[in-house]
Length: 211
Length: 211
Image 1 (cartoon, chains in turn brown, yellow):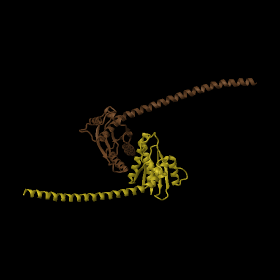
Image 2 (cartoon, helix red, strand yellow):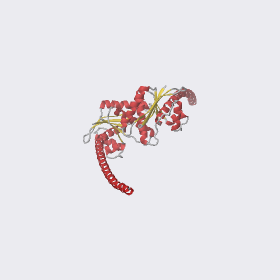
Image 3 (cartoon, chains in turn red, blue):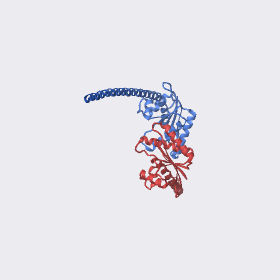
Image 4 (tube, chains in turn purple, brown):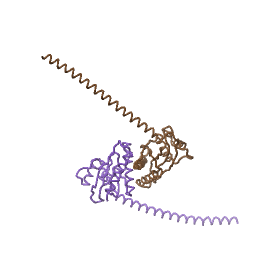
């Protein structure tokens, strides 16, 4: 399976393509950072990023796209730009029918280093080791994009299995609920029947008194 | 001039097309709200919004697109979705070479009602009056999209004039600065000349004493 990881951003957008699978060795296919200038208009910056992503999808043909899920942290302005860039990337992938999954930074850190609180250096170090790179990918956005792709490769099969298990559990629960409802209905019907017979006797006795 | 106003959002994305210009009457060409379900995946929701916007650009052929500039307010989750949807809309417009301008909610309110603190009802009321609509556009997202388009029609010529004036002022300032610099250089050269002559005299007088 081939995954494109994207660390979205207007100033620097990290792109990393990784090949591999659960229990298989993982290799780096390509990594780069797209930069746009803060002097450029927002729409033009988004277009530049979109064009670069389209090009990567054309050239590397990934089967899935993993994007960092943004949270509103420190700088609101930066976060908005990041969300806008992430939206554009998701759109590009969706247009080609590719699955797009958003992973949070802590999911990525946990998947790659084993700790959701790992720092940038630890993530870059593990990415370098896992992909057997000769030098550390730079800047951090490039390493983050690769980490996202690795996270997706490793987490997605488990996520799918979990989703299957949850769907099965939900089905069992539905069947059980339906059985309970049917049993309750039977019980109600039996109770009504009994009541009808009882009140039927009562009416009869009423009639009896009027007669 | 024809403007497409967009109140971006994942659950409800307001779209409104308006014709008009500064000092001319303004008419409503089309207004609608695109809805996507929260059960749908984010990428699919963005694709649905993008398709709708593309369709509107095809059908109504606006010359500019006005999008609401989002701020991180109350609900972080909603704001992220809004930013992502806004990014997608800006990309669609940029792909066609259309100018995209982001207006803040208070700019829109001020342009349409005269007060940046107007409430939803006031904005809807003014939009209905300005566009001479028989009934109020509903839901609020539809009215907001029309308000954005009207704001753009009314603000943009002033913004352009302001930008021109600022550019001119900057040019004048540059010319003035250059003149000042040239004058300072002249002054410096004159001073140096004088100094050279003075120290020249000094040396001469030194020589005089040595002789």
